[in-house]
Image 1 (tube, rainbow, N blue to C red):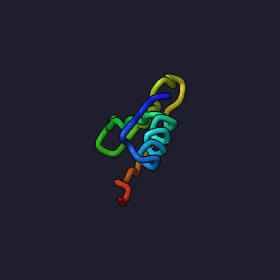
Image 2: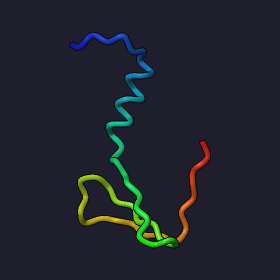
Image 3: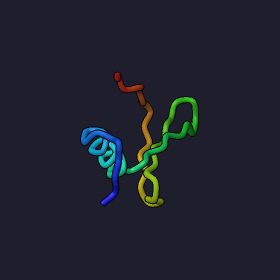
Length: 55
C-alpha cells in the first residue's frame, strides 16, 4: 500500500477527477462550440449557446 501525506478527502477528490473523462471545447465559428471527450473519436456535441458555469 502506498503511503501518502494527503487527507482522505484529497484522495477521494483525486479519484473522482480521474474517473471523469477529459472534455475539451473548441470554437468552430464565433457562434458555435464543439465539445469532445478524450479517447472518444466518435462522440461530440455542438451547440450554439455555451455559458461559463458558476463556481
